[in-house]
Length: 225
Image 1 (spheres, rainbow, N blue to C red):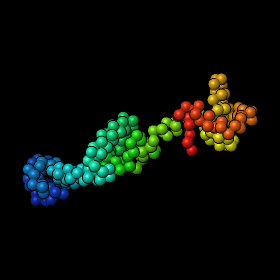
Image 2 (cartoon, rainbow, N blue to C red):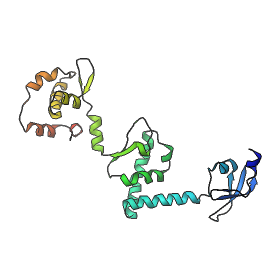
Image 3 (cartoon, helix red, strand yellow):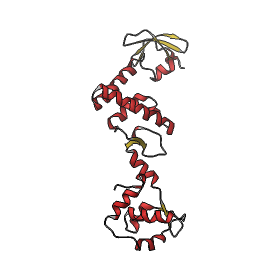
Image 4 (cartoon, helix red, strand yellow):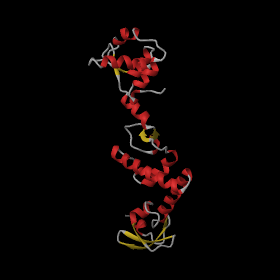
């Protein structure tokens, strides 16, 4: 440490004023009037420690007030915090979390106003950590549908095409494509594009067929638009 850096008695750093040097530490008085706080000199000089802890408490209180205002009554906010605590714990078990969300209150402050009961927190880019600009709330039903409707048709070049995309390409409804796919897959065969040529021609044009199809399909395979 330089000679100038050592002589910081009387200097102010944030809310702290250095009053006495103790080895690699300094005793500091805080603006709030609390008892003298011992702070590592390097952290004091770099601005990493700015108060006795009162500044962080005030910031947390401000965040609490903002989040409370977004949801209404204290009772509702308490219920919200409890729900978000579960989400926050699950988030840490599923993947990498940005350091900014290591603190639960920071997570609540940024996500409370957009939270919807029953929705799940999804990463927009699954290759990036959980963080404010990479997360959104989404209905779990839609999430499951997107994940489990992983049905694919084998094309002539050997590549796989998602059933939803293939149905659009051959200009038939997804429900009709699903019915053909299920019938062929039930025999244990790999479903190919050629299978749809003959099966599509023999399909019924009953206007009520699509309704029956949707009712017979498992919930995870039903698409709503």
